[in-house]
Image (tube, rainbow, N blue to C red; front, side):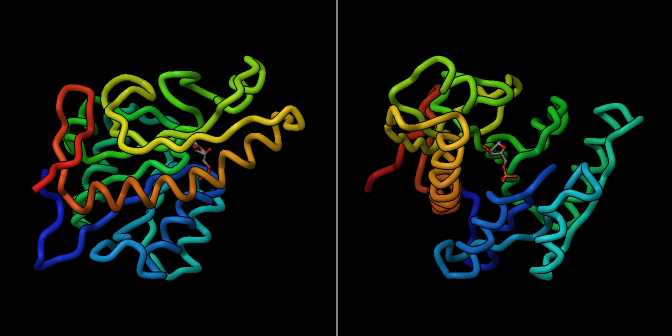
Length: 210
Ligand code: GRF
């Protein structure tokens, strides 16, 4: 899989709906030189007052808003695709984007959409994964960065980070500790994908050697 080229940076398109802490962690990695050859081309939201959007504006990054209310998924996603293409986006990063993508969107960026999920998939897909994990009584929790396919929280796993769940944890403290891992995992996954030295074999992300 070759995404990067020597002539131009790998352009990220970030999609978010909320506070944007994962986006900010990615932006920090770019700014601090931990993602060489990678730049954020555009930050897009379906929520006009998303805090993450404001953070992107403050960083001087291009932003776009496509309010989804009252539009079909296909109409809305067609606008998103056009926007991402206009910004020459190579890799789409979902960072708390709280809307399902249409099959057309997924087909427009095959194996070029990453998502972060706050559990060790395939455990606890869907909403409030940290609460689900805590209520289940897990002793190990964590997060997953995966390619997006047409099923929810399902595609090929690129990075997982695991943490123990001490008995002193509550759902809130567990979510906060998972978030710390998310911020590390997302940049790590982008670095791996941007490097291009990998293959997807069935469900497996495999680093290419030699
Ligand atoms: C994160 O927990 C992420 O795993 C999930 O949505 C949350 C987004 O948080 N998909 P933030 O907006 O990046 O702070």
